[in-house]
Length: 254
Image 1 (cartoon, rainbow, N blue to C red):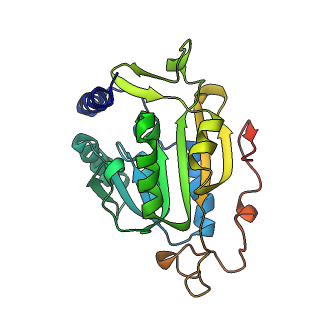
Image 2: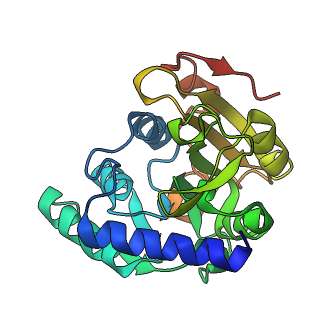
């Protein structure tokens, strides 16, 4: 299937999914692993601007806003954004900027976010679009900023028996990732702090925490997360908040 037809399939699928509300994924409860990452990042970046790409109905954007992150949430489907605003109002999550945008064509200024979160967007992008996707993420994320990613693994049920890593399933383009895919795609621009494959009831996902490579902030900016990646006083490295992990299976990032 060609690039254009895959993108068209995705748009038709998501438009219908958000119109009906019958799509098979959780609507209001955020992913526990994303919440865990955000809670610990809050210790490192107490004042942070966060971008949620492919936000859908906004469950992770809402969770971040309730932790007092300054959140911008984007999706290219207006029906998703409409539902997200409704859920945010219901949860009394204030200050979220919901915006129609395509992750492959971001128009935000350079280095304007401290954290970028992607739960379920990248694995709907064709491999030929991976570099454009990464380029947009790198451009809007500050040097030393954090990137939280969740993507399908080979164990995702819709790939059982599949001979190739992608397909059109139930009307949408999907692709699973291997550990090697993630490290090769992001390893040059990002330090992979954690990379784990989920097991058990929700098997079928890789969860990653990465940090964009670059110069550390100056001492003056380190105290203000709005002007750089700031650490709390006395925090010299991320490891103090990322030492114990709830993962069932830890995958070294090197």
